[in-house]
Length: 234
Length: 275
Image 1 (cartoon, rainbow over the protein chains, first blue to last red):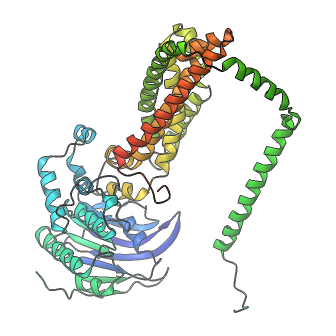
Image 2: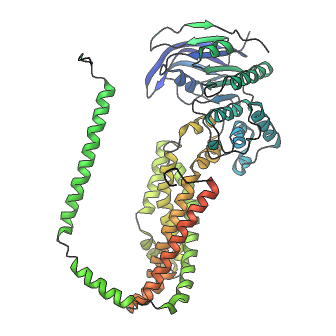
Image 3: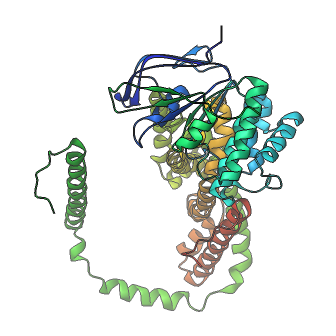
């Protein structure tokens, strides 16, 4: 039987006790990609933030990587790419990518800000993988929006997480770069069996990368699911 | 344009309430300002007496007595040491308290305790802290350093927690979601994000403390203030004016230093408006 990194049952999500989405029930199997699509403001980001442990669920239950929300999954197993990158602007691209390996550090290393050499090597490789070689020491605030997006992607990739939650991962990227990132994502999924939940506005991309597309509707609406996955296996 | 009436939404009512409450707030501020002027009888102040005093002061202070420069520089160096150490210790001590006081970083009950502590330290101005430490430790720079330290904790701590609360939450949320501990989020996200404000506040505090370290010398807590007080007592305004000019020059230098330090840490700090 396939394991499910995400399992939601009758889940309600929202802000300050006010539900944006209710009665959500879905499962994301290991190694699969689920895209969340829907109109702006329909609650896609809220759902993703809830799965990431940033917002508490309002009702129902959700299990993420074996931990029932609001309990956090084991450190380093969850990758998250927020809508606005979530990077520290004054720090370099390399430092930001290394934030994906903070779970490797003990208290002393954390206080000193010293990462193991293999973490630094892997962070450099992740930066290269997303096409930013030579930009390791550039401050994030000096990079373009698309480059910042790729730093956020590299930060998630360097973890090799069991589950990746990504909010508009391909926005700000040109088609060629987006395709290159999709290839990286495919290869990482093939290697690690990582599951992916992605919020995507571009339906073409959503269908290309996903095993399932979930269309999120208005509050109280049924949530239709649609099988997709027309990407070529690489 | 359609004249069809639309139902009034909760968001519309809230928006109108916000506008009305802002107007009431400004009205209350202005009314209270007017009331304060009346209570303090500021409208009866006669400024002509001040002009006479100013001309007397000008005659007594000009030309300045430059022979006091050497004594002044000695006192000023001591004042700078007091301000520097007081600021350094104050900023170091305030940092953990201000992190605890930030509503976006720690629970409410911890915020309250930390805020009360900072508010308690701000109750007394540095000159009254200096009086207390002169009584406890005797006259001299140690009383000055402690007075400046305690006041700095209270003052800069408040500025710091306001900066932390104004930070973009997304990097913190993102790094927390990746599995970082609270300590790691503070060390790798919160402090680096706030570094601009922290350096700026520390330099502002140092500049502020240079002036206050000069003032606390008046009550015996060391530094140039001791000499200013002594010359004032003997009505030697031509010497006092030299010492005040020295303090003024140092404040200008510290201000410039603050700008360059910020640039060093953060790259170009200029904006299109400043060029």
